[in-house]
Image (cartoon, rainbow, N blue to C red):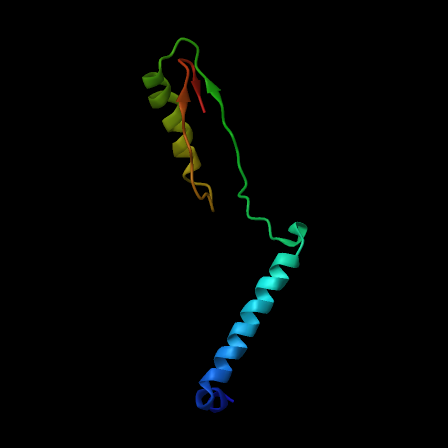
Length: 89
């Protein structure tokens, strides 16, 4: 079988282009509900520390929570934001 396509490279290219075109046409006709789920699971942690400034929140709350999150399997990424004078997210 491989020898057949080696001896006829133009035929091999035509088959390749046909397969690609059929794939593109079928993909356009496929409904959105048939697409796989690609959204990662998400969790939000909100902490408040009354009377603390952003530096204190960073060192005493946010870093401690992040250290605990490092042991979670399959955790792809983390996002951290210390907002307002008393909130860490």
